[in-house]
Image 1 (spheres, rainbow, N blue to C red):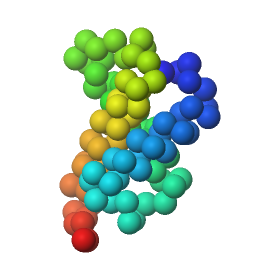
Image 2 (tube, rainbow, N blue to C red; image 1 turned 180 degrees about the vertical axis):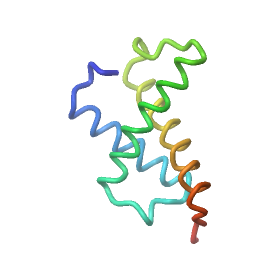
Image 3 (cartoon, one colour; image 1 turned 90 degrees about the vertical axis):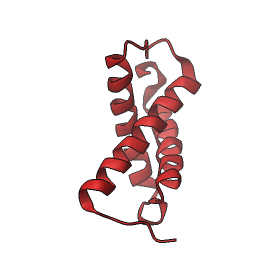
Length: 90
């Protein structure tokens, strides 16, 4: 995933962070920059967790990288919501 370059990380991170925030109901509190940060951090978290389970994350390709970021973003947002006690507003 490191081969994507910084622009690739921003685009994939932004998309994954935005979709993750939609899934977790936190999109109203987040702007585009926070979505990008959540997505990139999610990529690191997702990659770390998948490596723990023996998954080859380097050879996964673009879609796999996006799904890894999305998985990590959802986990990160879940943990943040749990720790801060924030509830979603519909």
